[in-house]
Length: 440
Image (tube, rainbow, N blue to C red; front, side):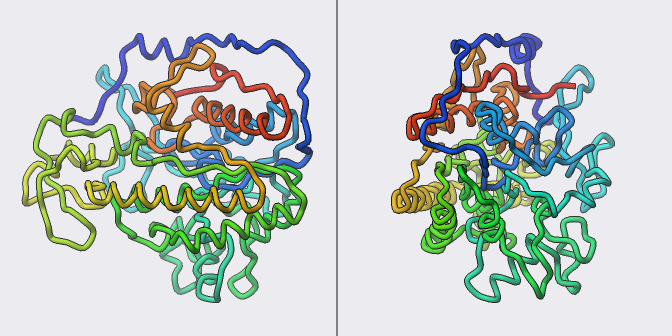
């Protein structure tokens, strides 16, 4: 099977020449009973502005994170730790032999990278200024369980993950360099030293927020699912719902204590994202053999209820998965039983989000329901968008994170809930003004 190719000229033109006219006339923004003067956002990669599998900003991708779009509509300052150059590296499209191809980001752990694969920019080694006060505190890969530790073991684990690695574990660093954290996306915050640690919750306390958005929790469910149901590292395991609730409460208690108002958001069903829905048996038109589960030797034919990850397309193109003796690795498939586990876990965490938000008196943005609408297709400001990979126009090339245009949709859903609960009339963003898929 050849690598997945996409889009007619008509679809490309449609995506880039969408009507920018909006139904909203000029009017003065009313802030209601909320104080947006120090608007702070917490969350993971969806809030930080990650697209295409990385942080990059050459066309304002990171700059157009959904909370930044909200801040623009409010008219309030919103400082983000922006990357430069190619940032952390990212996927992109290339035009080859008359067809569009997806080029994966450069991977230092393999020897057959595409010649056009994009590596991280050298400036990313020094990203960013930890003395600066940021409004966007989101960190890609952040789990709710990471925000505060319950014991010394957790404290050390979370510091090695977000702060710096222990000298003896330098190989775990994001770039293999001793003294670097495993996760590079939080390096704009000062996490102290291994012996004098600063935890994420402290940065929330120091924010002095007057208003906040909290979209924590997605990574607690997503990491396990996108690893094919395999907790390949501590960051990929599913968060226990009781621990999730305890630490989610801690975050809301901090905002409540500082007198901030704000909104929380639920976790959407990530298994319906393009990462899981693009490579299907119907499209492959061949039998695909998979290794079922993380700890079994069961090899069987895939069925429609199994979700083959988008990343498996390149393996299938090489013939992997086409015979029983060379099945797709289990990390490349969320099998039918794991799909049920993933969705049940999301429902359990969402129940905790609703309960915690109710306990502290904060409204909730139902991102689960919103993403279901996007999956079915929506039209906004004359722009038709769906969750179909590339041609749907709302998701970036990693198949998980929305692009800038999708971020505008998300920002408008948050704005709708904010207006409904705080008596404000913040104007929605014009979706057509934001970049969708970037073509070569």
